[in-house]
Length: 378
Image 1 (tube, rainbow, N blue to C red):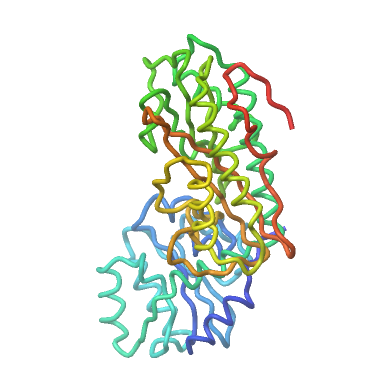
Image 2: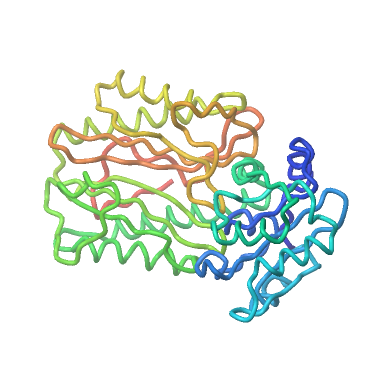
């Protein structure tokens, strides 16, 4: 079954801004609007693609000829206009298509946060009566409410990644390097169904203070050190994003207490999730929980919406007054540091429901600091 975006929401957006059409061309917005995952749209920037949704006509897309087969097989949009790479400028094909659709003098919404300045200049030189409105974030806001198909997929990918971590860390032992442990996680993620890994941040000891440290082949976690990782797999256009903290063995009372306090703060924050709560409210609640448990707070945000983009709208940060709505899928990921400077981090995905939330991981992190080699079941 082909994915179809929230077309009503997109059309309401267009009408609210008095637009004649929406043009989605960032990798995330193009993927969402078309339902087609075209890898090169993200990875080869000059190979631009445009999904055009006129208010009063049928949609069409402009793509590189090389990607016509993929787009046609995956997208609900059947009218595809193609250009030849290197021979044609993709903006020229868009210009031609807009003229043909009677949109050359229109008021159009477009991803101006993503459109290159050179492409913008070429477009406006050819269509000087065109008015462009930046709708990058507005389309992202429509994306924030996930379809049932998206929620099902994200739950599957998240639980698979969580299990991959549990199995890898149960197999870990003293004498293994950071790289060996991280490689086990990556292998399990891929064997569990992922296309590959999106990121693999893994560190131990004093390196845990670095938020995105990469596992080192010659660093061997020592007894008494903590291990922290933030990992994700790729599943077509979507991904997973998951974090946990472990001990390499014989954790101190201070480490146990710091970790337990973090878990308590995360749990309280998650339990506050329900429709109508503002994104920034969860941030401030989490800060209050950190104060209550006596652990330091240092983060600019404590979570984010999640979908075809790693960090989507809303962000759980001060100033984001987006009210939570059913269908939003959110990662909640507070972190703290102990008195030695080591960082602790735990991250879980959930979907907002009509009455509260539903966890999409296998379960929250155990309140007792887990040790490598330990089997955790849910």
